[in-house]
Image 1 (tube, rainbow, N blue to C red):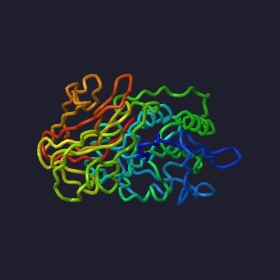
Image 2: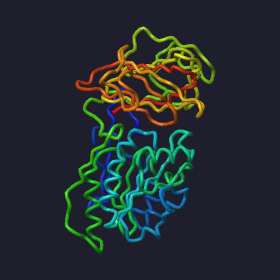
Image 3: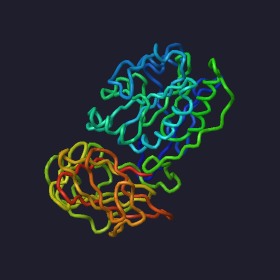
Image 4: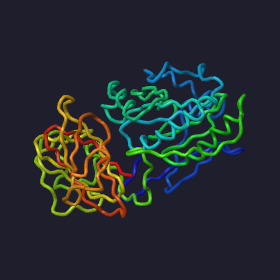
Amino acid sequence: MSRSTSSDRPSRRVWLKGAAAGLVPLSLGGVLALPPVRGALARALDSGPALSALNLSGPWLNGPPLDAGGLDGRVVVVCFWTYSCINSLRVLPYLRVWQQRYGARGLTVIGVHTPEFAFETELPNIRQALKDLDVTFPVVVDSGRRIWRAFGNNAWPAFYVIGADGRLRGHVDGEGRYDQIERLIQKLLSQGPSPGAPEALSEVVGVGPQAAPDFRDLESGETYVGYAQAADFVYPGGLRRDVEQRYHPPRDLPLNRWSLSGVWQAGEEFATSAAPAAAVAHRFHARDLHMVLAPAMASRPVRIQVRLDGQAPGQDHGWDVGADGMGLVDRPRMYQLVRQARPVADRTFELQALDPGLRAYVFTFG
């Protein structure tokens, strides 16, 4: 997932291969410099195939294993992603359309599923996610991060466009610049045996959580609940680690701060509600609010209720709850809980777990 703080808007950074200058860094909305390219990716820039690292991990889903030999002569888009990351979910409509539109002309889209959270390493969860998210292109499971390290990758999502000669031609970290990626795909395909005529760019419309973000109104950043990366938590003494604690909500919650109420046990990756009516709150400014949530026991779904400024969300409800704010957490994944209608404003979000055993991992926005 992309990293941002409460005062920073997310930055999208792009590398495109220039005609004479190698990879040229471009920056959108940020000034952070990209780290040096490393590993198999660095070698591929000069003389080696970029696809050899794909055989470092597995299993493969949605088809047989693919390797450099089997992809010889094809243009390949490799995308690093993970299924609970909102930034990853919003690129899926583009990958889906590109595979459908250009597959017969020589393009192969490959998803490298590299997890952030432990539940994303479990094959049944990944298989279910591929079904839920309508992912039909080949996916290689990279739970040990071997392919990630070989590419020197450092972002979810990240795109690597590889030519028919097996060498890297373009690299994009994060969301955005889809038009440039697609133009590069078209250019590489035009150099093949069946070039065809230049084409217009694809019209891509995401639905629900896969819809394009609203960066114009995004003033809140990714916020972790597990103590390993937790920040901006409002409570005297902070989170109590690995023990049950009854928390009391603050009188006022400042913008881009969050709190707990009721009985919770804060772990390294997530906090778990230990009694009914435990709640987590966040004061935010964004069109969409999501949380990565899971039931502590797969056989015991957890009922949740969402409130905005103390009321049912009504027309501002997200994909995974109703206008009354009611929803069900039945498996580990990302849940869209708020989609504000215009105008977007500062709001206080509260999620109450009506049953014990809710795991809360992270807030994300869009």
